[in-house]
Structures are given as structure tokens and as C-alpha cells.
Image (cartoon, rainbow, N blue to C red):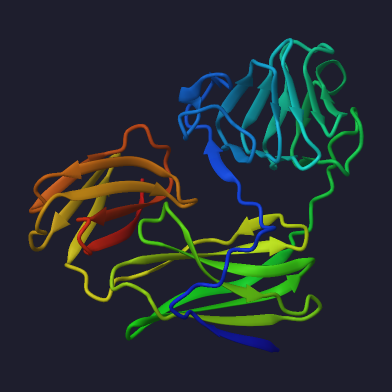
Length: 329
């Protein structure tokens, strides 16, 4: 087994010039138009460089003609292409239809078109409805065979990823079963589960064998910390691992309980100053935020518009105290 050891010094290794980060812009309302800013989590229309996600159970109507570069569209729900709507993507873009997802139109004609790199991948009058799994990129065919149904091989298959606090440091360990065209890993850290900072780079191992990696964050704060791995391919494309959360070195005893769609935070002792509460999805998206002037007794955070699932409640006073708890709504 190949094992590599790295420690974070005062200066993090430089961010690689060829990595391509995409900004997550996810549909947050169901049955609304692509052209509506309220449809999207960022409060703006999808733009070049975005990772555009339509979650399972959501439908978005493509009601405009748009031209985008370097985007990744992930359809877990339904993307419904309206008449006279065209989505023009460059060769660096790709579309993934997850199992259970749909790309379709209710008015089949030649006016519903999606192209990648100038090649027609979807035409309403011939493709009508494409169900997942399906994948289209510059390397797939032309409509009506613009989407491949062959599942992609992920560049890295993780066996495990853990982070453990050890005195003033946090040690991260991860193991991969396979690696294909893997350039390196970027270790990312967050203090709120939303804003991420690259704190170091770890070179890739040998793809034909199991690899184990070890990284030490010698500048970890005493509060709760979030970590994830950003795996970068040889061509600069990148994917993020799941997120791991490390508890704070000293955290006031606080209980978080969900009753229906109401989240109650019970403080065993008061926290000085205002406290900001955030409801965060597991992908790091902040779904709701509220600031309470007094943090004592019980605080309640309503989440009636959030679908059922697992989320994280993150609390912070902005002065060094913070905590995070997973909840099931």
C-alpha cells in the first residue's frame, strides 16, 4: 500500500492554475422557469462556469435561448424544454441525467434544441423524452444518439475519508480503491460549511493499486471545522468528495431537536452576543439563515419550505464560538 504524509505549514501550497472550479447554482423552486432568477439558489440565472443542478422531484422549464460555456448540468428531476428554446453549450460543457431524471418536451418539434460544441445532442421532434441514466458531452454522438446510456467511470473511487482532532491539529486520512487520470487532491477547509479555502495539495498515487493518504492541518481552529477533498483530473476537471465535520475543542453543551419542520435549539448555558443560525444542505448550500439577538433558553428556526432530508444546523456568535449538528427533517 502506498502511503503519503503531508503537513500544513504557515503558507498553504499555491492553488493550481489549471484547476476549474464551478459555482453551484441549484434549482430551489419546483415547476418554475429557467428565466426566473427566483428559480435558482444564487438568485441569478445560470452562467458560464456554473454547476447547474435540478434536484430529484423538481421540474425546471427551459423557456429561453441561452449560450453558456464550461457548465455542468446535473438533472436529478426534470428539465422540460419549451418551444423555440435553445441551449447552446461549448465543448467544455456536459449534461448528466441521473437515474430517475428526465430531459423532455411537451411540444415536440425541431425548435427545442440543445447543442454541445456545435453538435446537436437533443432535438424535441426526435428525442422527445430521454430518461436517465444519460450523459452528453463533446465525445458523445449526435441526436437521436446524443446521450450515452453507458455509466461513466469515476476518476477516483473512495474507500474512506475521515478527519480527527488531535490536540491542536486535525489529521485527515483517506483511501482510494481506484484512480484514473488523477492529478492531485486539494484539501479544503470551511468554518461554516459554505465558504471553502484550499489549505494544501496532495499528489496522486498509483492508479492500479489501493492508495492511502494522510494530511495534517496544523493551523486548525478550536471550533467546528468542515473538510472536503477536491479531486482534480489531469485535464483540470474536478470533483468534490463528501464532507466530514470535526467537533470543536470546546463547545458549550447545546441540543438541536427537529419537531416536524421546526428546529429547536436548546442552550444549556447562554452564549454571549447575537448568534447566527444557518440551515445547510449536505452539499454545502445555505438554505436558510437567521440571527438571534439573545442566545439563551430555546431558539426556534422554521424550515417549512425545505424538503424532507438530512441537513446541518450551524450556529456561530462570530467571535470564535460555533457548533454544528446534523438533523433529520
